[in-house]
Image (tube, rainbow, N blue to C red; front, top):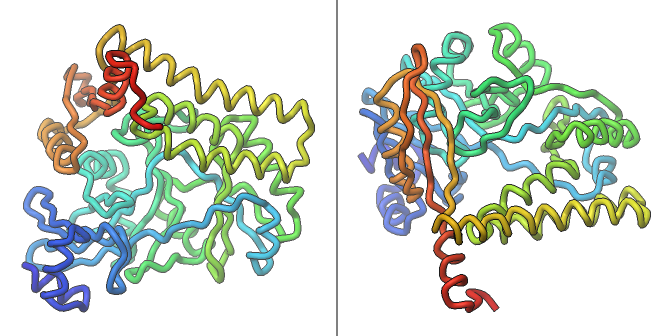
Length: 378
């Protein structure tokens, strides 16, 4: 098995074995499929790469390229060549959909085959994606899963149902993005939903880009990804005030788990957004109040909940159409150390709805503080 994986990647079996021992590569199983996931970039193989053995054939799923975040919109003028395609950035999780043999599979950003996402993609959009991938051998469709019925980033969107997939790229077997117009033609031909294109402007037209962002911010949307139509330069991403502050509210709900990693990056974004806007005192006070509330209110509510109930949990409402997927998602998340528990299983028509509950470390830390009064960090 190791020999097949290493041969597909062009590295020696000895190096592959060493990477396994160091935890850089992880061996996984999904049903009757063995696969390896690269958790870090090494030896020319990118983080998030998956190598899958199915029915005796080896498939390499390239990683999705990281997108550079900018803090100043002025960077657009320096980065792009001429035209900029502005697409909406959605608040969900990144998925690559690939055809392996005669089945489609959904890979997370980290390279794992997610049983739940694979099941829902097949059920909700399987015909369209299958036809596209069958007719265009070895291509990979990358997109965002959004909606409240997912175990990672549940977020309500008016245009999304419980579970929705919106494509934002089509990748070659080597991981290169197809030009925007070619991608759009393919997705539209097969009826695969795609992210909204909000405009195409000259790189000099920052006023128009700011106008688009102002509308997104007013509507509580996440932000934009800006692309060269031919991918001559890599894309850039930029988020709204609403997204930054909303993320803080979510992160501070479980502040010992996610809060610290959320705070500085989003504060940094707000600093430079206000600087570039030329914000006056009134605007700064408005954002400062929102920031303060997003930091304090969810965290304080968490402390009160731990005191009253002993613990806080993250809960995710999921829907499946095959009972065995419930155990598969539970086993998958346990294998990644997430320790979930499944509660409240019920049938609704042809589907099964259940709640996935994850215990958070924040509970233990808050209980310790309430008991001792001691600070866990100085």
